[in-house]
Image (cartoon, rainbow, N blue to C red; front, side, top):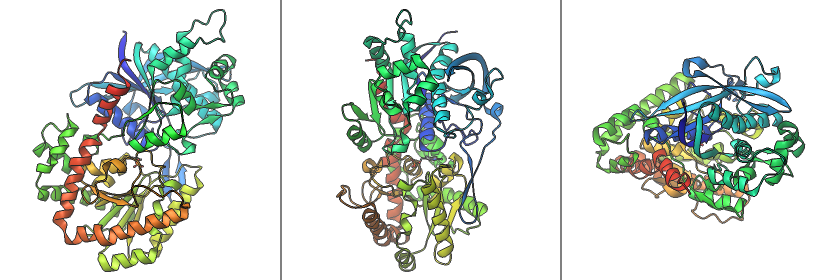
Length: 567
Ligand SMILES: *Cc1c(COP(=O)(O)O)cnc(C)c1O
């Protein structure tokens, strides 16, 4: 049966459900929220990813905060349906056969969006190839490139095998899927007498169909492969095509995505600007990320919105009318969300968190630029603030990539300080940050802290999840917060809107830490402990101004009208 899809959305990771561990962090969760919202908006979209039989990893932390990674085993057939059609790709001259599993996301009106998970674990494949769809971001460069061949080329071929003969737009969620352009080129050109010649019109025809979203200014987020490796894995014919697409000095997935796409965007206003600086000559736009409102709203807030804002699940902008909700009801919903969080923390870590104490949450991937330990820059000052202004308790969560030594060191440092400050400040570090933990953390804290080193935070989405639950952000002005921060109205800024730029990383950290302490001491803690009504008004503003706008519904709408529109 032929199917029609307006958009085929390709992502190396997709976070659909906390029980399906095929994501590592923000990129995958964003993909999941995009798909959930596309289903709500009845967008004819299909999504493609890899099965990741062993997931990303399960994070164990010993008492010193040393991370141990365990492979995840998950009961695939409890969640996904195995499909009959097959496709194949060539790697290193071998044929790798692929099958697909399907998951269906059901939208608010019952519209279904399928997600196809590619799986190479078939008996007819060579033993080393059977493992190619096992580990998300695992293995060496060769393994990663083979995975990207499967995602990009295998993904296009699998969609064709599944009956998707017509696809209007191919959306590359990050560069990992950029090799899909090779499969589309192959479809465009007749591989007759001169197989190595790619006519300019064929590239142009592919370009007109592709949309590329770049997600990070951090260099490690942009895959590059040595020319010899690319040639060996992809074979002579595909390599020739890549050379004709400017990859002769090595395969650069971001560069390939940029060259192959007519619509290109960064994921927040500032990130679009930064990306234009990184990749001059490309018309890079901005579409700011968003989150799926109903997915991230805690049960207490769902009930509150059902009561006061009927229709909010269909139209997330309805949260703008949260200004009509009495502050007492927002506070009651927050108390319930906070109780769920504190029970979770105390059960998991025995940290003895107290419901009446101001609770600061910091949860995101543990990697150097996120500067998770910035709040510990000056321990004496932090202790003074707690003694003079009011108590606070701090909860952390986040995984470090297995090869990110700096990220791992940050987790250990937080554990050391946790023991050191035991008598003054309760600190907890939750193991194995995932979507389930994120749900309770984003909803139940009193403030959502974010201290990235600008301009490294392309967007950030966890603060948006917090806003859906009325949790204001206290954040460095980077990524989405540049757009979301109305000082003292939706939350608070750390540092200045325009950074001077001549400082060293240490000087900047010292200045940001001082600003963070000033905000806590003179504004945030006094507001929480002494002007509770005002604090809850800020919570309500976070919902009305930021919960409404930073939704994945608005984001998908922008992709529809700007990126997917027929050109
Ligand atoms: C939302 C989310 C992220 C992304 O958070 P950022 O603020 O973008 O760093 C990462 N991991 C999980 C599990 C999430 O739910």
